[in-house]
Length: 260
Ligand code: ZN
Image (cartoon, rainbow, N blue to C red; front, top):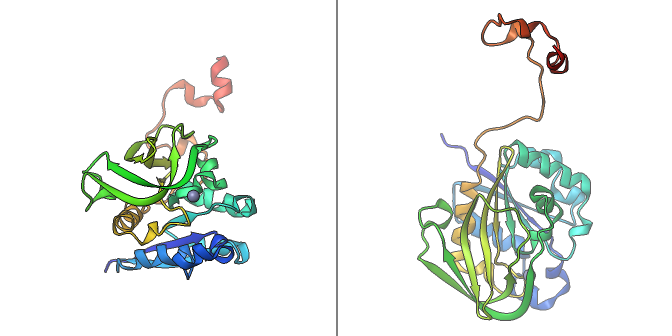
């Protein structure tokens, strides 16, 4: 019996309620569009959570029951409670996967995991975006051609103030000439992280076939490989896997050993 991968789709859900043009594209909210794209894969068990729910829908119980969390936010990053960010951060280090979408480059959780500002350049001019696939063999880009295009998107440009990714899977070119690292793989602790650039709220990007393919592929790549509990247990000499016979074993601390 195979158990389904448990995915929680988190949405800020503010633009959808305030801007009619966004609501017209995403009548149930962007998170529901992302969730329905993931639900096309029957091996995924998908739920949603939003900023407006108690604890933003990310209680201890929900996160314990989440294998992969997806995160879209833009105008309300500062409203995300630090206690929730702490909890998500802990779960990523333990092994939960995190899919960071578009303007979530500036979310508290992504900036904390990266340790940098995650700033970038941008322009909202509805220009064409062409995303080039850097490694056709990687599971996240399975099913795509050498590149695909989004007819209208917001431009994000370099410099993108992130640590050098473990692997860059997508590079965007925009009609105005800028380029950007649009698919970035990381590991923090035991958890995997994938940053995926497209998804500005005023364009129907999450309805596009290639984008939905990447969302599904990414969630599978982000699946936990195990669980790493945050602790530093002391291993007494008599519990070491091998018997210790050297004289250093008689010192009780590394500090004392240094002075001998
Ligand atoms: Zn945007």
